[in-house]
Amino acid sequence: MKRWTLFIPFIIFVALGFFLWRGLYLNPKDVPSALVDKPFPDFNLPTLVAGESKTKADLLGKPHLLNVWGTWCISCKVEHPFLVELAQQGVSIIGINYKDENDAARKWLVDLGNPYGFSVDDEDGTLSMDLGVTGAPETFFVDAEGMIRYKHQGPITQANWAKLKPIWESLAAQPTTGEQQ
Amino acid sequence: MMTLFKRFSAALIFMVGVSQANAIVDGHEYQFNEGSRTENESRAELFQQLAEELRCPKCQNQNLADSNAMIAGDLRRELYSQVKQGKSEQDIIDFMVDRYGEFVLYRPAMNEKTMVLWYGPVALLVLALAIFAAVVFKRRRADKQVSESVESTTSEDVEIETISAEEEQRIAQLLQKVDTPSDKAEGKES
Picture 1 (cartoon, chains in turn orange, yellow):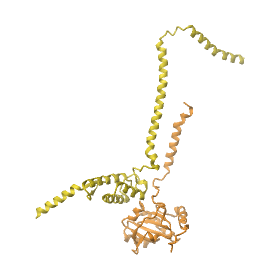
Picture 2: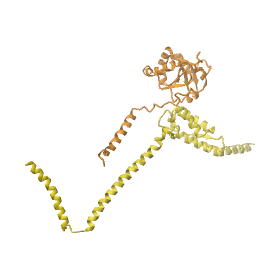
Picture 3: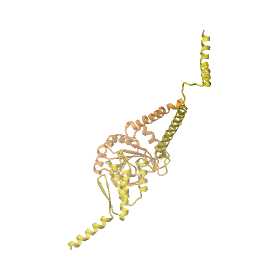
Picture 4: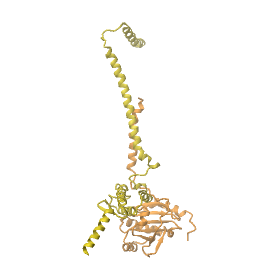
């Protein structure tokens, strides 16, 4: 037997150890979204405040952040002030009010400010299910052609916006289609 | 009149009871009574199977049947209504994968990406058996050679004291070989 073959178990141990060590630092919650680079699903839902019905066509023409929120969601409350700030900076945010009580949700917007161009009332969670939403908040980056380009799970904060901003800017920089008003 | 009604309702219950099938998931009873008896039974079975095989996207190590998360409840309801509508297993799995990714499958589909997952363990087992067989074969052969040489010495069963002239000559030769280099070395040193 050649001398180097004695080291095979050691080599296997090191390789295995490397993978296990890497595994310690992976985030198991970091599940790739099935919907990235897919078209935003069709929907027809009333808005929360005015009650007008909105469809996917209302999203086309310019990029938006689609933010899934609910008054029952604590992280949404954390995120909310920063969304208001982003809206003031000119980021177009559309809300998806996920399985919420309408009165509580309207009150929330009055009390805390309304960063949303409009919020659709997804009371049964049908749109959210088509979006593969697993909880709130979740934010979808949708381009002018209605394609989902990125999905962010958890609150958007000053800290992680630094990373998200380039993604948003790349959407905004895309040549927009003729549907733009 | 009353008895007639009673009989009628009993018959109705009987009829429904015949074709209905139930699945019990997480302490809740799910009823399947849309189709024929066999259809309902297979639907109840499919529901039970999928509720156990689909993973809750929120709470990572639970299936839909076990999880109490809001999303798991929603997906159980969706699953129930789809199974009741008579959708096939593949239709429902596609629906879930389109939305939540392959992540939700506790029994992942067989494709290029999951090949290692499916065949890796078998390949490792075969490799391990091959190594084991090789080691055993080698050992056996070595053992055999040793035992053969042992056998040949014992079978001769000679008196070890008696050394033939030929052997004596060879011993002398060997000893000389050993002696001469050391002699030379000594000679050089001195």
